[in-house]
Image 1 (cartoon, chains in turn orange, brown):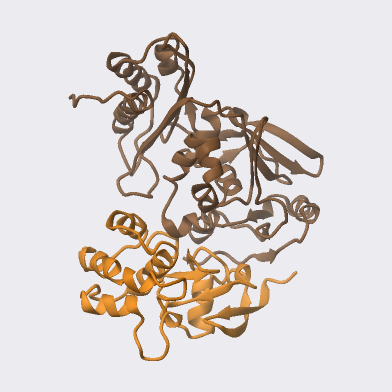
Image 2 (cartoon, chains in turn green, blue):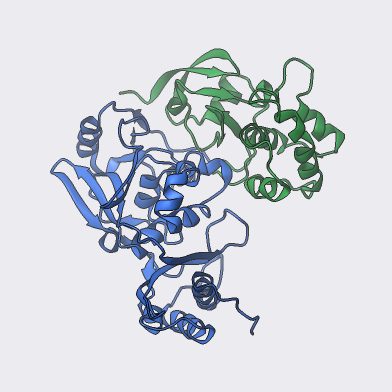
Length: 164
Length: 292
């Protein structure tokens, strides 16, 4: 056994590899080793939601999973939500509704609500509020975020991959 | 903060996981979903030298429902319970309690075994297990043993699990059809730890009296506890607003929570009375009038 580990991860459909300490969180591995800095790290103990990514299609806090644990899992970060410079329907709705200000929490809120709408395209305002209780935003007061998420629902109702 | 350095193993078999635990003693920690352990590591409240990842061990993620009750594997996640139509029929109180566990993202990884082993006094599943008289099946070098919930939780973040032992499953006794039940908790933000909570059920007898009354509380002591004083008030009675209020008062008088950064002890004490009353009213289909 060694405290350093060689990991191979699948992120946004591409293979990545790194030689890291076992204690490296998935969040730090994405940012420091793979230079995918769209994922933000806020509290580092699972409270703020800023580092949320998708693991096998489910929203997961990437500061609460070590990179070695994620081997063989399908990981999607905020960089993987859209293709190129074209905003996804959810991202476009955030822009339309001014659903961000400083933007620090936005990556985690986009990944969280993308997972939500992919699984529950009919989520109502209460459900969106309940889910967003796990993401701290100190700028917007959430009102525009909820408006944006509700507005983006239509794009997700045409099938599981329709929100991309 | 970052975790202290540790080494990581992911055994393919349960026997191997037990061997590693036995070899490294208190230097090793089990990780599955990691939703309670990783914050402990990040704060360096735990600094194990070895993490034993049981997250992919086979056969620990099953739920079985039969005449002997409900068996829930240690690796079953909150999400699995919340989304299970079978469990909602087989044990509605369990599903309602689990709906209150943590936030959306954490519910996708947090596990039954992890919550039991972490033994937070305000956590829902340990409280539910105690209220329902559940048993916890564990396995270690000396083989399997079954520990009743009232002997499993021995203090804050402390259990009677030995260092070489792993939780295999939670066994809930069968749920009687038509049982009256309720789960009530209060937290300042949805998904945060409860300041206090109450789980209860009873079987309504033919004469309308409440029998087999079981009331448990979280967040008001070093472990989840049974509110036996409140149970005595209700046992054998027809539940009215007055009885629910008396039971709430008895619940408050029987607990002595300490002050901490989240709330003064007196606040939690008042809260447990209100929650007991509310839960009894909800279970019995009463609508309570606002009162001071």
